[in-house]
Length: 315
Length: 63
Image (cartoon, rainbow over all chains, first blue to last red; front, side, top):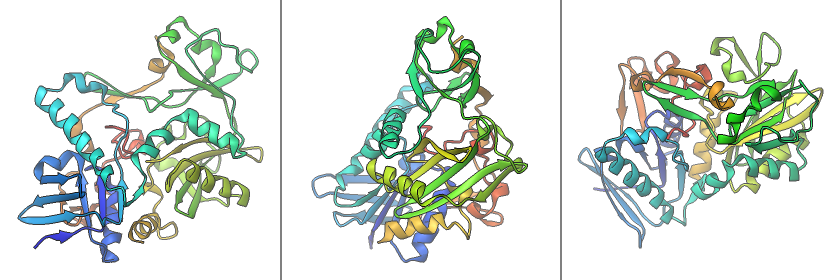
């Protein structure tokens, strides 16, 4: 007998945080089907887009996802960042391109509530859009230029450090190595080299002596944490601090900033968002929002994020 | 060299580094289980993420 599905979970093998959402869905008696993009070929899937209806056969069992599907938890990349794909075999290229399109085809379930909808994620992942919307909402936004011009006119004094970062997540493959781009602080003169013309970067006002905040928004719910090391804020990109040294503590966000966080999530057409803020001398600065940002490292009894996501999906 | 290439951090891209050891994925429950039960409750058996200086695609950007 086929199992009906209320919630479709579209993610990947290594999304361990979503394991917790699945467990919470099961606790609520919500019928769900999780599909991981790396394992799609291990199931037999058939999709009728007109109805729409998805039939999944796996391990002798059958799941059906019909037009009455309630919600979708979308944890897929919406940009193809796999620049190492040139080394893939023809078979691998075929599988990657066609399964990716198959996953996107689930957008045919237009009656379901999407968290988040891929079209919204696509727009919201664009840093320029985020900064524009944040400024409109009254957030303090660091001055920013996206440029490949070593001679760009920037609003800072000579020798003053600036933040250098990529326009989009920078994850590159080089033979057996992978390269990941973090935010770097340096005088503009060190970045303004002729080679810059080859590709744009983001140069931004450096926020020094800052306290990093991570705000996780799930629907109307919001959790704010500060990220410290040895009781103090972290200079530069806090992700470069060893995990054992990080202190993740709850932080009381002002009502005004909390409202802005909820507003930017809503304005970008999202229901979930991971927002990075920084506090400098009492001012709260908007850094970015990630519509598919990590949250498993923040999920505790006091911050029941997985349960909140499951509740949102089950409503 | 381009400043973004100059400042990236280089690590080994061994795919096995991101895979859980001694654990099995259950299709029906949508959960990984290891020797101590659910892997999501067992940080010692979850592959480290970029929060520990290694990118596993946990934020779903490594498509």
